Length: 314
Ligand SMILES: NC(=O)c1ccc[n+]([C@@H]2O[C@H](COP(=O)([O-])OP(=O)(O)OC[C@H]3O[C@@H](n4cnc5c(N)ncnc54)[C@H](O)[C@@H]3O)[C@@H](O)[C@H]2O)c1
Image (cartoon, rainbow, N blue to C red; front, top):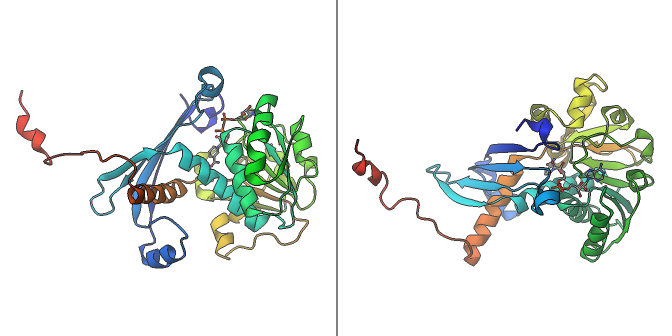
């Protein structure tokens, strides 16, 4: 078992603790239904084995999320995190596409048609409702075909399986890469003027291709650097682009601190590492909803705190 760089080979286990602050904005956020509750602490624990789908027919990644009670810091919820994780990853690209893609975009190219590919398409379509066609490429043709059959009606788009990543990219206004590729295959010359590309996986685009982009955004640059394998960081580390070429964090675009797209011909790259904060805020929403509609199970943590101490003996 290794670090972030072994995601695509032997697998990895990620632990993503976080604190969601901002208590003073809680009323406003609740009124605007913008985010899960604030002043919440928790962790997503997400192991992944690349061979699970092919060898065992199981998901590559599974996850557990633990949410702590803000007052006592005692766990108050243990829940599955795989769905929240996939949905929030899609949502980050969807928000990025809403702010950074050309709103009149009609054609999307998607490479990687598994779990993340599905939530990429759903959220990007929500962010850019004008999209009409999605060209999809996966190394497994069967996977692309299944994807097209399942997703077309859900997003009300024509989904066309294509024979190469290049076909998915060429002439696409919006692109998403969500694969387990171990080696870069993207070529800088595939992008049309004005293209927006969300790369949520790690090795698809070579660092050299980042020179093509007018603007590069991430979800959080500090975390991208810490993770150490995202192409935006490798391109800076290897001296291919300067750190100043990283235009900013998506949140700053949403709040108006940083300008997003400057003109329709800008080629824009979005490279999120994926934030525990997004997992936690969405998990908390799910937790609240589950309580509201009465699903889930109450676990007895202790009848009498520390009563086991009375039974200690040598
Ligand atoms: N940045 C984030 O926030 C974030 C969050 C979750 C997952 N991810 C990443 O998303 C990626 C996809 O996750 P998943 O759960 O869908 O994985 P998965 O293993 O279920 O599916 C990967 C798919 O990619 C295809 N594929 C592999 N190499 C390819 C290539 N060179 N060209 C085309 N298709 C190729 C496979 O056939 C498979 O269908 C992973 O790299 C994962 O680490 C990123």
